[in-house]
Image (cartoon, rainbow, N blue to C red; front, side, top):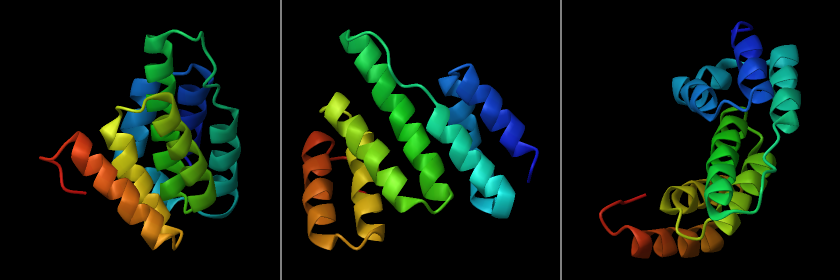
Length: 131
């Protein structure tokens, strides 16, 4: 599992959203423990999401924050996941996928009422998707 940490470091340092997305999708981060988990969390915290203020840059930042939030979720750092996913929804108010993820994280944090509100909002954005 420690081989994932250098891959994560490379994706974060190069700001390679596609590589970060693949790592998160592999769910390999979920298996990390101890020093490897701490290294992954430190690496994720260095990921720069600042860019110019253009709409496309905001959309890219939102997607980067969502992926980092998903990585934190796999690492069971629900507080950090919530912060990133919430920031993603603030950057792109039409990013339904981020709202679905936020409802999941809020539920895991024990915020059932807010999770329900966010889930209902996500459904108004994409009624075909059931979180």
